[in-house]
Amino acid sequence: MRSTFLPFALPDIGDEEIAAVEEVLRSGWITTGPKVRQFEREFAEYVGANYAIAVNSCTAAMHLALEAIGLQRGDLVITTPYTFAATAEVIRYFDAIPVFVDIEPKTLNINVEQLAEAVKALIRDEGRRTGDGEVKRWLPPALRDKVESLGRLKAILPVHIAGHPCDLDAIYDIAAEYGLAVIEDAAHALPTRYRGHLVGSSSLRNSVSPKQSFPHLTCFSFYATKTLTTGEGGMIVTDDEKLAERCQVMSLHGISKDAWKRYTAEGSWYYEIIAPGYKYNLTDIAAAIGLVQLRKVERMWERRREIARRYTEAFSQYPELEVPTVDAEAEHSWHLYLLRLNLERLKISRNQFIEELRARNIGTSVHFIPLHLHPYYRETYGYQPDDFPVAYREYQRVISLPIYSKMSDEDVEDVISAVCHLVKHYGK
Ligand SMILES: Cc1ncc(COP(=O)(O)O)c(C=O)c1O
Image (cartoon, rainbow, N blue to C red; front, side, top):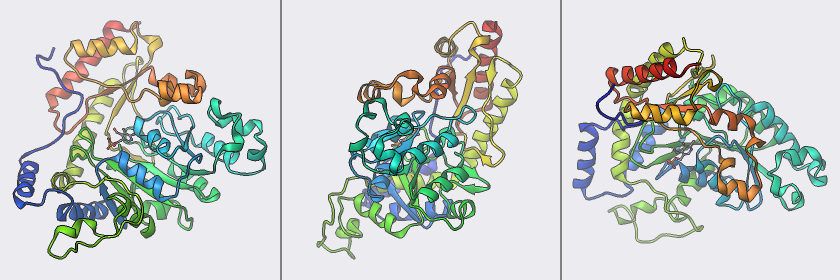
């Protein structure tokens, strides 16, 4: 057994990141400035998108994206309950309504058949106005008698859980057909590829839905545990100039273009506020880390991929375990390795399994406690656990194992031997 605790996640920060931060600190320019602009340019180039706007979190990115598409109070946005707090809270910032659609069990991403049905029912048409049964089926229970007061269905907010891409063919088709915006929660999805194209890239959008037009933004996270980190940070990418400009302006107090330059030699003291914006700008300190991380992103991904391969090879032989699978058209970022327990074959619960791993000095986590189980969503919308049966069932048997580029081969083998030991010991 390991003698030291293996954390669930650690950032891959080295001397280069430290030197880059030192350089910024010594430069005298520590907030938004040239490093942020460079990070945006290089990120846009790496992903292959027209515009990238750096912000201080993915939460901020999604908030700005929803603002840019014009989300209003009472409007509806479809997402899944199988995600982190941020995905739905940004919808609530507008007093708009998150409409949850269940996930499909293989990838834990949004079930696109159900998504299509929900969109058909919720789009403002005759059915919606009369509040028929189909409409009510998709609304949160507490709102089923308030159909008349609801705004428009505006957007789909799919989440690429763990780094496995959603079924983007289906999602883009539905968005184009019904005129909905797509805002991708790509917090886990760097680098994730779909049909060979990076999530967020123009080439993905153009190859999957060549002639179709709908508002589209992709939001990334650079939080401490993510595949590229700046401590805290995020990025919005889009090909739409107007949406990009709106996000840029609203990320810094709604101040007209190049607000950050007002203290530079080329800047001016004069500025205009065109809307009540937010304080979501990234600092040059964080961007300097991001620039170094971006140069290592493929290498760090390779290592995560190697670890995932090793885990899958070791765990596939046990019927007590279900390893993550990757669809033929997908390349997984391996932000998370979601191992599922076949509980009917084990004498212990998922929670006990986690405790046993902790006792063996292996840190783990659970992604995610579905949103509809949390007090806020339960009480506001009247949800029951079985309202989203797949999300509820999978949550009860999932464990996130450590997977990060700083792990040594010994760390990986320690995780494998602890998991295999428990399976042998507690298997029925
Ligand atoms: C699926 C998902 N979306 C959004 C976020 C929010 O990211 P951030 O912490 O950068 O705001 C997270 C954070 O972990 C996440 O897991």
